Image (tube, rainbow, N blue to C red):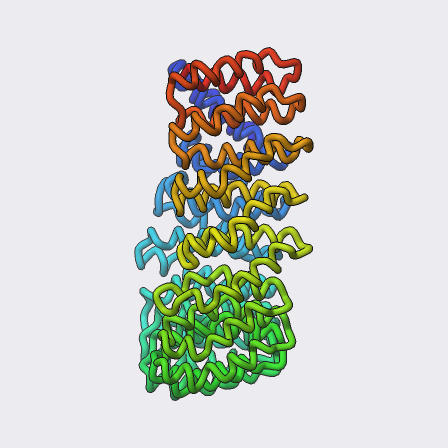
Length: 598
């Protein structure tokens, strides 16, 4: 019924519009027709452009025809309804402004009670978006009744959604209404359905930020402490993030008195998931608590997490070692943190050691040169770890040592670790170390590369895995950018470009990848004297894959060649290739010629 009205509406619009607007209106008509399409993608596309449809229909017809039709969509596929919930927040102007906001609020209310949690959350987001444009009077008129209905709903879905509206409504209400909010929110925090309590835990911090501090302390924090001790660990772990939100609103003394008992309880919680969540957010918690309380209260708790019985907790805590140490002095790190770090280096879980290895290099600037040298065995032991990810994580972060200690102190261990990683059976490990080798160029220096690493880098061009050979080509380009054209000419081009004679076409393909990578680094003169002759040679290769890669490589090289060279050497080769018997070769050759002419 409503769809028919849409089509009549558009016919009226068409009749009143000039021909110039026809295409645009036709597109809108298609969008409206597709609201009823059997194709889900077309319907989703129409829902995503509700604002355009509403603009075309006008506010009155949007209210009278489009909105009633959209209400019928609440029983459609979850994906469709979820997108609808998101787009309704953009229809304020489409329905005629905030004076008609009740139409959207009513529709969104229905969507906040559906079973799908994602749809409910998007409906709440739309309600928050709409509320940002409303006056206090409109909030009180439309949102307070909505909150009351949802909070007293029979189904848990409505009560769950209600917890997300308190932060919207709390800013502009009387003290009496605010008191009723505390009572209602408290009831939801202790609802018999865990889903409701979880929603309350998620939205606790946003509500807390909107109430006066005295009310936060007297009304909400006691509720929060009880919530953080909920029987369901899924509720308790969600309370952790709210420690941070609430602690930022209190003084150090208030935090120590009101929150720290709950924090200590969470650190020793019987559920590893709760302890994991504490470790995951430990640095943020330290930041809002301040250095003094961090040292007195949180560092002991952190050491407990580093020694937790569950590997997942130790992994999360180890990842935060450097972040916590940044808040401490060198002496405090050496005395309090480093002994436990030494234990983690020998942890039975390889994933714990890998997590620690990803951040431990960050301790060097904190400890300073003397203490770093004295504790260098920590880094060396991780560089010799049997698990490749541990060694890889250390090498990936060696840049942190720059300016603190001479990298030569680690060079032998670094070289051994690199060699082992490049020989690893897993090609992804080899790929990861290749991508990190250029980062070592500056810390290790040109001499170290010339004597120790360049031969390894060149050998990778012959790896059996294509991704490794491709990454090796890019690696050579990055090294060339660091050490310059002369170094490249001496150390890279002789070996890398000699593969042009290899009987296996895959290695000749690698030569093309190297040419493509180096052409932007060597400069016009070297490109013309070294790379162009190789390109011309490969243009007559018997393998079609080589020839069409030649055409693609030429197209990339053109900006780095002189016009005379292009006309004398490149164009003749492309002229031959455009008549190639292989269609792909001819296609890319023609494209390269068009690029030259343009």
